[in-house]
Length: 84
Image (tube, rainbow, N blue to C red; front, side, top):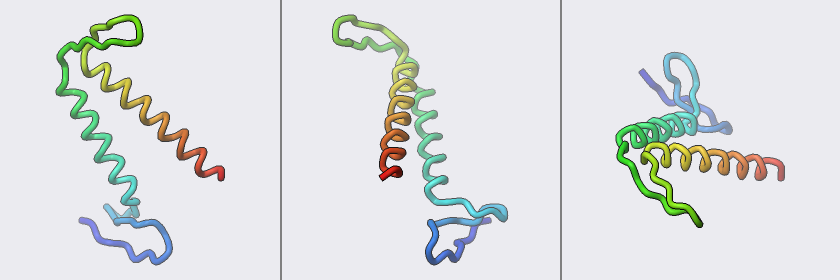
């Protein structure tokens, strides 16, 4: 099913169904799947205290917003580093 590609200077890859796939991409897909699963199983409501108001929301909503904010911040940092 998979075999290791012999790249000497390029990024680490695996060949899956005849296509080279970067290990970084596989790791991202696995982490995204775990995050989505974790969000899906946490359905109870939680009370969150913001600076002034207190809000009651489903935990999956809070986790989704946190995941999206983290992804946006990660992309901004990566973009900024690539410009240097």
